[in-house]
Length: 335
View 1 (cartoon, rainbow, N blue to C red):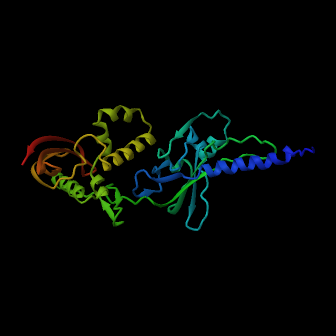
View 2: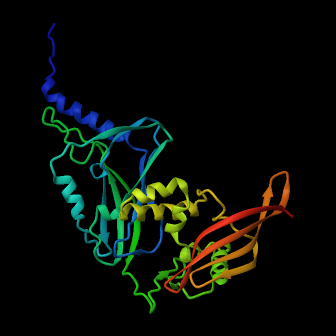
View 3: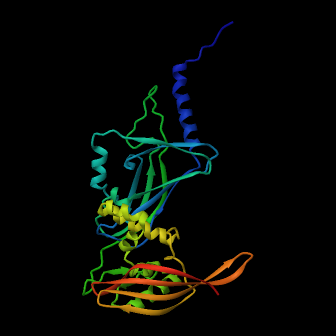
């Protein structure tokens, strides 16, 4: 009987190619999504632009990828102008990727339906030195940015690089201050300038509560001293002292987001159905405003009722503008 021999060397590259194709197909259903961690007006000068990156396994299989401790070796951002011109990489990014070092990473395993998220500052990746409109897309390197696969039989098995959705980013020049040093802010909804005016303490508190009733977050934050509010939180105060200037900026942005997501302990973010200012006391530098605030509560099976809380808002004068630095709450039951 005559036997037929198959040239294994000829079929090996084809076999490896099929393995690579199956690997790529196995990664279908793995989604990389990005969103602004704290969407707001971004300014040209030194504003962190925090992007939340989420890897979601929508496939029926377990998905594994490597995440570097220094995430510049796992993630990258492709930022382009409206004219499709690529934005240069940040100097810090180039330095971190080109220096001789050992890269530490851990394996992340996602079961079907699971997600993994982390937050990065876009300015650590792109040199955003001009105001204007940009389009942002993220790329994830499942086997690290600098890792190279070993060549077998002349074929290098490739690992699929994940690409995300697109975000539209607008960066504005920092508005000039009006006389007296009062900073200008922009209303996200109307794009109009929000100016901290020289209001008396009771009107500042009324402005804040009305903004909360209407869901106008930029107005709500306008007269809040975020640093003072963070420092009153024992869990955050120690970290605040230990943080760098950039770290403190991130903490303030995260605190803003936690307030908007109702993830901060206390009653600051609650929405009053109505309020009455009972008493206002102030001198040249400090003041208090006492407010009776009412909250409509509806519980399934228990009906609706109104909860009463007495707030005392503490204010300090900064550059002739009253800022809210603290508050206390007394629960007074229901009516």
